[in-house]
Length: 354
Image (cartoon, rainbow, N blue to C red; front, side, top):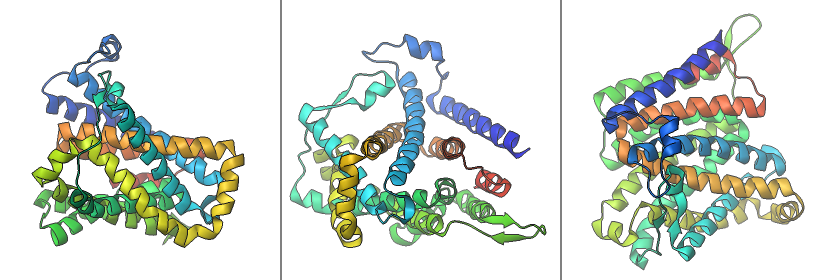
């Protein structure tokens, strides 16, 4: 059955990730026992890396859950408050970043049973911030478009997001002179085919027709485009050694990106949903579910992205590809369980291919 196939697919994805991670680290993957025996003063890097993977996945799953609940609390995709929710999530990220600078500590490495890192306010100049605007704009655009896509259909939105490598290849080639390898190009038609097949619906007469959530498709592809440009802009920004040095680390760069992204989304939110702001504020004052899920979705978004940065910086491109593939399958299964929405056979097979 397809349920069995999906379960086997999740198992295979995790095992493939395990083997790739083991190979990239040149040693054995730690067991649960070794993880529990690690000391908080500083767990071995191999233990920390595995835990970063675990909490990256867990954070992504919980973000999807809290994001769906926050959107439901304001009335769903037809409420006219989706951009407001997306903007306020980055607002939570901005507050979290400022608090870290105030206490001069970044607790992210605690998830890997390692001591938290110092995080002082970056010594960036006005010129550095101006150079960071394109990256922040793309990051904010990718986030907002993803919220719209997942608000349309949390499951199909994830399927469309799996086509991100296609947009990354096109954007990288056309705008950043970074063409993908021959083998990556060969994989792109397979990804497109998988997403297309997941969009099919079998009729009563046995024939197939395209049926999908338009919001999830349009905004999912828009999110993929923004994400592709974000990757190019990030590489371009951090290739400037002076800028990278003044930021003082990936943590500070990510923090500034979220704050600037929040500032960028604010006027867009006012322009598109300003007439609903009073309604949102009233809901926020009285609805504890909205308060909780909005704050938690923002925190989970910040933390899982930061943990992803830690892991992918160490493991390299091949492991990153395997990790993202496994993550999408696991998140889709989790969201199907949370929302109670059953994946069609075409969505199971198509998403597995993509």
